[in-house]
Length: 192
Image 1 (cartoon, rainbow, N blue to C red):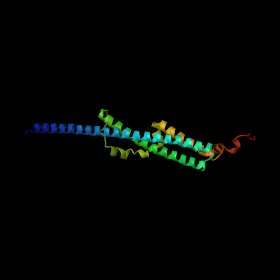
Image 2 (cartoon, one colour):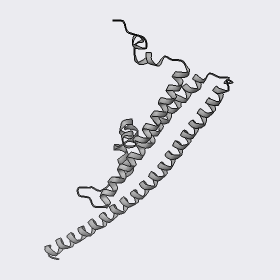
Image 3 (cartoon, rainbow, N blue to C red):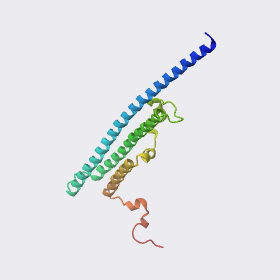
Image 4 (cartoon, rainbow, N blue to C red):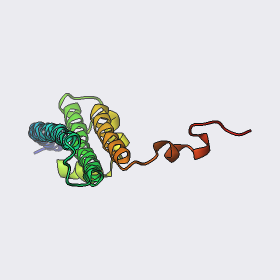
């Protein structure tokens, strides 16, 4: 066989292998994208169930607490209950930050896969989820990075935390203004 025929045969084999490898990478990306979408949907469902449960639970909690307080038959220190409620709302806020951080990371990975699948210029073959996750850990995201994207959830749970804290401080009869302003600036006149 002559050298030109041999090099042409090798070029055809390489071209065939490149096409086969590209098809396999594309199939991998499609499978990863489908799996990613399934994970996104499952995570969203879990987050929504958690949010609905927490918000409904707080509504029931405050209805119960208000009923106990107006009936004057409390039998316990409401500040302790409200302190526990405030701590619980902070834990929920942290948990939602993690959940939404995972959602954000999955969404970014999905975008990367879609860019590859739709042949965006400069897009490389996708890495697997585990390799992507090693470089883009959702637990290392700062809360403001997550809640900048999902600001409505961050705002709702921050308000819930602040409301719990306010109720705790109010029932424990803390002088709110003295927390922020010196006593000489609160009420009355200031001597000159």
